[in-house]
Figure 1 (tube, protein in one colour):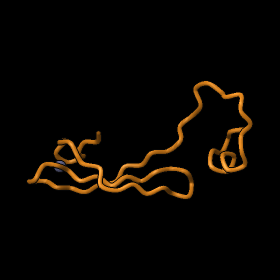
Figure 2 (cartoon, helix red, strand yellow; figure 1 turned 90 degrees about the horizontal axis):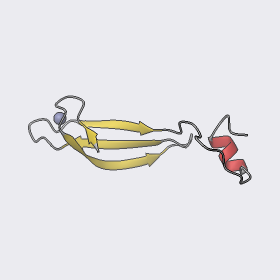
Figure 3 (spheres, protein in one colour; figure 1 turned 135 degrees about the horizontal axis):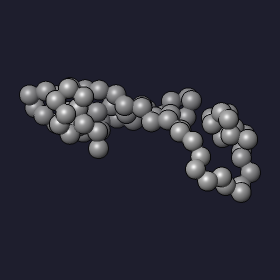
Length: 68
Ligand SMILES: [Zn+2]
């Protein structure tokens, strides 16, 4: 759940775009009818908490820079 950056009321998720760098761009619309602001949030890879034993594929190496 995202909140409107202007009126601080809950916002609906409208659309998600997968970007080439592996991050996601999400469009939201404020549910407050007097506001109705549309805004974008971004989700990106942060860091690994516990490493896996699987072999990292070439796709993941390109997307998640710094993962060996
Ligand atoms: Zn709002």
